[in-house]
Image 1 (spheres, helix red, strand yellow):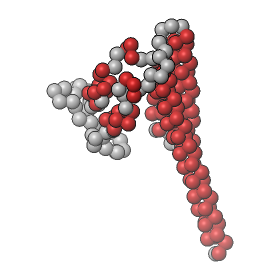
Image 2: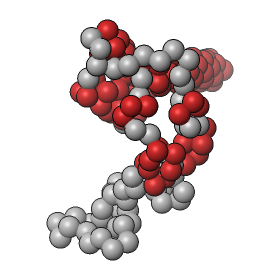
Image 3: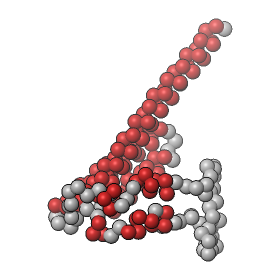
Image 4: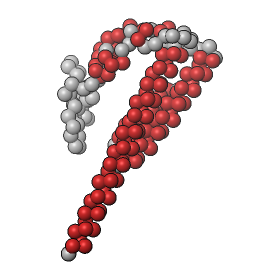
Amino acid sequence: MDDAGRSVVRNIEEGYKRSNTSAYIEFISFSQGSLEEVKGDIRELTEDGFLPSKPGLSLQGIGINLKDLNTALKPKGQLKDTKGDIKEKVMPGKKAPPDSDSLFLYRPLTLLYSPLSKIKARDLTYEIFIELINKTDYLLRVLVQSLEKKLQEDKKAYLLDQERIKEKFRRK
């Protein structure tokens, strides 16, 4: 389950760095497959009695607002869009390893969004996990739709450019 969950994130990251939009879409589909695997694991954990089910329970019900969490996770000017090496700040009081130029600025989620620190293992239920999985799946589907739209627009622009070039040579 841990591997499948990590695979969701890692495929998004890897796909983002691919050289074209089609490859990115393919990696998003790998993420969606891994997410479905996690969903199956959650279902089996519940069926086997390792994860409780409490119908009606939601993230809001345990004090988690995903909009607020998303706002808290957005970078606040620490990373710049650069090409090549990214030099990041070292956390205050920490020393960078001697063999590195920088250290990733890590802040625990519980510091960025304090309601997470109040969650206990007993709060986590089948319904909570399924809500998170369904919301993640929705966001991945929206991303794929926007990337497919971008592909279509790029294709139209390419075809128009080709026609302009052909027309230019016909006039000569």
